Image (cartoon, rainbow, N blue to C red; front, top):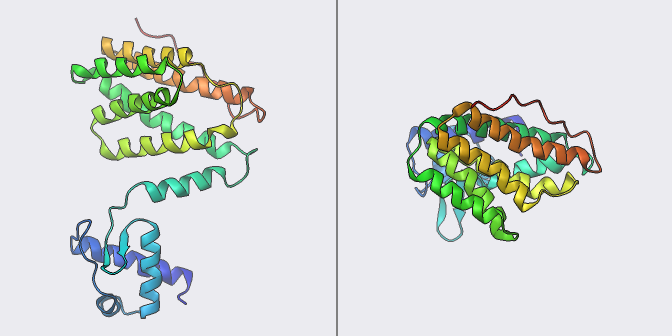
Amino acid sequence: MARPQRSEEITKRIIDLIVERELPPGAPMPTELSLMEDIGVSRNSIREAIKALQALGIVEIRHGYGTFVGSAGSESLQTWLLFRTRARGATDVGRLRDLLEVREMLETELTRRVATDHRPGLVEELQACVARMKRKGPDAAEADREFHDLICAEAGFDLARELTGLFWDVYRIAESELGGPASSPTATAKRHQAIVDALLLRDADAAAEAVHRHFDEVRKRAKAGPYGGFGVARPVPAAHS
């Protein structure tokens, strides 16, 4: 069996070959024999590396057909991130806090950029999401996710959009560990409405402040939960007129 460091080197080399040969998702992978010759390692070492790449979504093994370049979607990263967030036990919410902070930083900047430059129909679409949030049920949560996704999509950064969506999904799965009272549909809608109002005015500073206030509610809720100390709401400057 290849040593851990050696396995990582082989895995990296296979990734380099995919990039160098400009193999798109769905393209057949080089054969095991070809990889053995190109990298200069044993068949077992190649197979171990392929399994590692499969777990990352970089390659896809289709039984009966062969091995192909994968799409490297966020599914495998979601599994890793959820495990990392929860692995140290329900009473340790430090990693969940970190996840929230990273998501806040991304969404604040994206919303700030969108505030001064967005298509006319965006505000109307966001307003429709807010209306759905006021009703209890699964659609309210879906409207919440769609709200943030619309803003990230409008910013035009595909990677940032994918990351914020990933963080949103992982956080929703893990947030039950926070405890504390759940936010009411009315309160949730009100916080999102403040973001819409700032976008309508094309006020970047007010939009950023509204996003911060939205995330502050989660911090307050966590502090009130059974594992208090997750964090405290940071001071927010007065909104610009």
